[in-house]
Image (cartoon, rainbow, N blue to C red):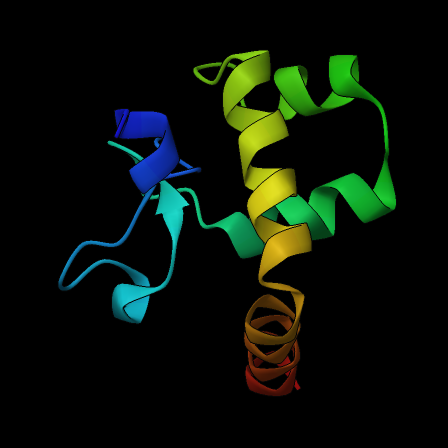
Length: 86
């Protein structure tokens, strides 16, 4: 079994102590939640790469794919973050 089959999102990881163990772009502290919210505000790859200049297009695309595959979890995290901001 190939690595991609075992882990369909190799650019996404969870790390103890990083954002409450929520999914982030691997090797960063950028949560999938933040990518999803930014994409909703400006669904444009050039804008995303400008907002996250150390990320590459594949990171953004995989974060968005992860969001689609785990929508319920990520939406709950977005709502929790919004509640904290109030």
